[in-house]
Image 1 (cartoon, helix red, strand yellow):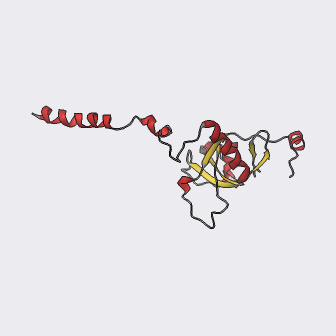
Image 2: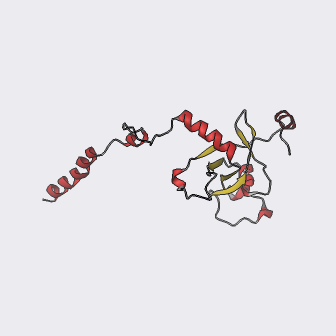
Image 3: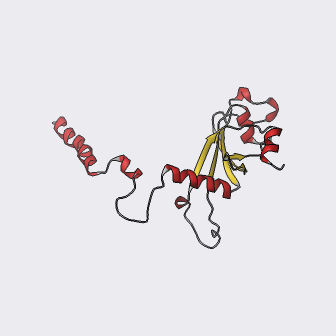
Amino acid sequence: MHLSITLPLFLVPFAASFSFPPPQHIFSNPLSSSDFKIPTIHESAIQARRILNLETIGTLSTVFPHSSSVEPAENRPSGLEGAPIGLMDYYANCEPQIGNPTILAISIATSFKNVAAGSNITLSLRWHPPDAHLRRYSAANLPRFSLVGHLEELTQLEIEKEGING
């Protein structure tokens, strides 16, 4: 008798799964002619480049290193190993032809200490409308993106070639 009750209960989620659209449905544009449209990869890349040009502050995310790679004089609290941290920092678009953001890395800043110890780095940006002080916007409705990469030191030749003022 226990099996006969369990079997119908097992079939309920199975039968209900046929009434929902496939999971990939949420990633496709609606068939109706509504104003809502999911941007293509190309459109998203163009929008990201524009936001990179318009904004000047982003969130740099890194991961705290293991205790063995921390200098003894640093006085970092224990238990932070492997914990992620995101800190806001300034950046500039000094290489518009390439599209890489330029960040002034200060060696005492947590983000750059973590990168020096081997952490990956992510720059997360979001667009702030110019009239945000006049109208309220939902943050969920505004474009945002993250760039995952690594830091490269600019050489003096690159600084002169790109005309980067320091």
